[in-house]
Image (cartoon, rainbow, N blue to C red; front, side, top):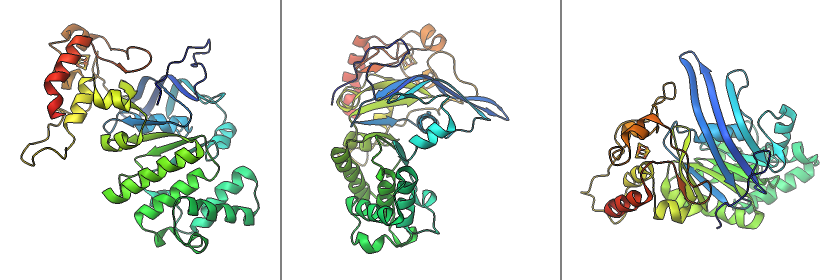
Length: 352
Ligand code: SF4
């Protein structure tokens, strides 16, 4: 899949991109102070492709995607920057505009379908209600569409199961129901937040394959939020590695997972179990903990945990925030020189 190489328009939006997030800042007012959850994030998504967003808890992955959906409380949240979706600027868009887009042009699936599906209504009614709300279809048309969607996501005996309640389905089947509900209006963009974390490995693979097949059929773009690099490798075209509300690295899956350049990406890869490793070889977790977003470190936010500060430039690493470079293609936010990154990667790649 192609990397994004688009030109900047006067509005700050990039050329023809389908979803374009530019210099996004999101902060929350809390009792302890202002939490800066997202701090100058930019990325693009192309039609029909999957962007995997990875990072530890608190890296800003989910917060960013809730902003795309307009689901933050305006009373406690400040959002600056631009989010262009098709021809619509979403930052500052009216509630009516966001409600028209949600569930229709942009849909979302969450980690736990049980918290997203109502236990009191049949799955057919819940899928049908979304369809009726956005299309004005009759009850009969909505029910037929629900059956069609259940068949499409591989629920056996869809015509009878449409009248079942969520608790009648297994975890994997419930996630399929959620996918059916999310895709019922043919959205252009699906945001999937840890969609398979609660499932066992076999069912996880089935659900990921299903998402891929549906993307091929329907041309839906997907933002897949996950902490699991295996899920990204299996499903995504592009990857964005986030740390402390900023982009640490981005590129195609082959670039970022095959030739990673950022010390944080190296750390993520070295903490993942590998099939080829002996069980006696311990994993290497990233030392330290993610920074407090109430009191962010100066300079590169990763510097308190980074093993390469001395090799880069301690003054820069601790004093000045690195930006993602180059602006398009495979980019990373780190002061190590390209030669240093290559040499370090060559030394450590056998344990990544
Ligand atoms: Fe480490 Fe410095 Fe690179 Fe940040 S900029 S990742 S602290 S070497």
